[in-house]
Image (tube, rainbow, N blue to C red; front, side, top):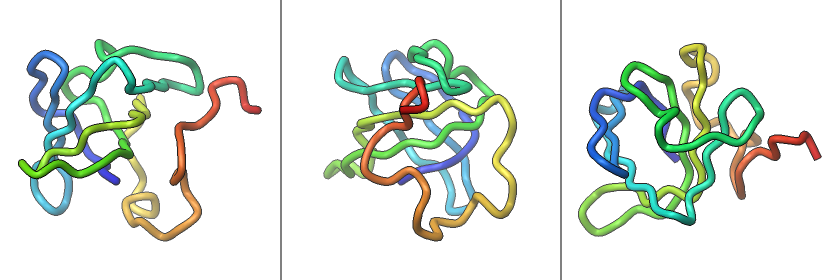
Amino acid sequence: HVKGKVVVVNGSTFSVHNPRGTDTIVTNDQTTFIRNDTAASLSDASLGKSVEAEGAWQNDGSLLATWVMINDQPPSPKRDCDCGGGLKGGPPDPKGR
């Protein structure tokens, strides 16, 4: 699970800065993108956006994202912890189902 601010975009890969440093998120055609509770795309994960991603850690240290949630507002300090609950297990449903 990765949260942070997008600092580099390179094709289908982007890097996010967070309290532990910088993490690289890799996306593919299986990655689901959500922005403001609606379907989105990789282009919505632009520089400066706050993102949250879930996926599988790869041998090179990157995260191959199953889903990416793009937030127009920076995360609050309370949401910066992985305190359980949250969005684990799959992407949020953009239709609220």
